[in-house]
Each structure stands twice: as C-alpha cells, then as structure tokens.
Image (cartoon, rainbow, N blue to C red; front, side, top):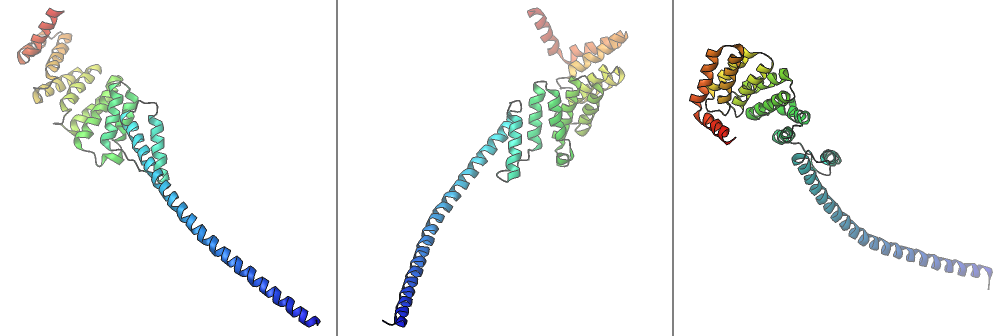
Length: 260
C-alpha cells in the first residue's frame, strides 16, 4: 500500500471517531439537561412548598409573639416576644406589627393593677406621644392622662399627679373618669396642703356628679378639712349632708359597726 493511501485511511478513521465522540457527547448533554430539568422542577416545587410552609409557620409564630406581648406583659418571655416581632418584621417574614393605642393602654392597665407603676407609666406615656396623639380619641386620651396621674399619686409624687389629673378632667369634663379626676385632684391638693383648692374640687364633684361613687366621700373630706381647722359649724354641716344625701352609706356603716 502506498503511504498516501495509508494516510487517507487514517484520516477517515479519525473523522469517523471524532463524529462518534461528538454525537455521543451531544446526546449525553441533551439527556443530562433533560434530567436536570426534571430534577430542578421537582426541587423548585419542593422549595416553593417549603417556603410556603415556612411562611405559615412564621405567621403563626408572629401571632403567638403578639399574644404574649399584648396579654402577658409580666411573662418572662414578653421582651423576647417583642424582639422576635421586630426581627420578623425587619426580615419581611411577617408583619409589621404596630400596636394600637388601646392595646398599649391595656398593657399599661395590667402593670397598673399590680402596682408596677413605672412600667405602667412607660406604657401610658407611649400613647401620649406624637405617633398616637393625633389620632387618639378624647375618651382614651382622658383615661390615659388619669392613669398617669394615679401612678404618680400612688408614688406620692403629688405635683405630677395634680398635673395629669387636672389635664384628664380638662380633656373630657363629661368622660368616664371625669368624677374620678376631680376626686383624686382634691386628694392630691390635700396632700400638698392646698386645702382651699381641695375643697373647691370636692364641691365641684358633688355639684356636677351627685350620683358619683365619690360624692359622699367628697362631702366627708370637706367636713374633715373644716374640722381640722376648728371650724366645727361648717364641719357639722358637711357631715350632716353625708347622712341626708347618702342615707344608704350611713346605714351600711351602722350595719358594719354592728357586725364588727
């Protein structure tokens, strides 16, 4: 065989081999792509399902954290719940959570009812800030001011108590805590040795709210102020009004005395 023919045969064999390799690789690539697409589709569906499930779980967790923070502020996990609410909101996983003024007020009442006055003040003060103040109802505004005043009253900070109690009445003179505000303003003024002003508030209470639960005690306290001054004529006058205007109170006291 001539050398030229041998070279030609070798070239043909190489061409055939290369075509076989290229075809095989192309086929394998096509098969791999198809298989990858199936697997990728399955994986995508699995991931999507996982994300949905994770989202549902985060939403549930978010609601649980809210309940803990709102209803159980004394719980040891309350602060952790708030941090978790903030984190989930920041991550965009749930929320955001912006508590309403009423919800914050209710948290404050929980603290107030167990005499945790500093924590109560923190809560009531939140809804008296600009974020809530512009949309706050007159009634809730008055109640929050009243509770602020009562916190300071219990803490014996009578100047601050007077300030908030007077604001409470001015904010809603016919609201649900108007008579309460007048009564405790009178008590606060007495504690500040401002007895003439105290008498003025007690009288206003009796005049405007004769059916208030505080009216009988307001009359008694006016009588007591006069008694301590040695003005027994005025003292007797107001003590008598307690018995005439509120006979049931005297009957209850007499019954209590007999039982004791």
